[in-house]
Image: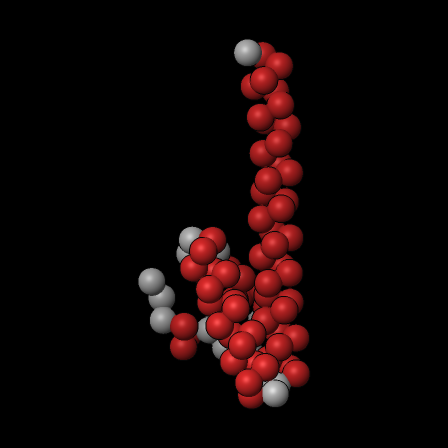
Length: 80
């Protein structure tokens, strides 16, 4: 597991998403919820917006993967 200190709100959203891509879904959710709590506690709107964007981008990426996999599953069901 990578160190969470390597992730910063000063980084580009796409870069953080790429770094989190290799982790498991549960770990990614844990990291994002932890960072969102830290941002709220610090009263940092910039950090909160950044981690919200990271979360949305990851959700968008994962839903895109699921949608891409759906036609493949449907084709298997029709062929079987």
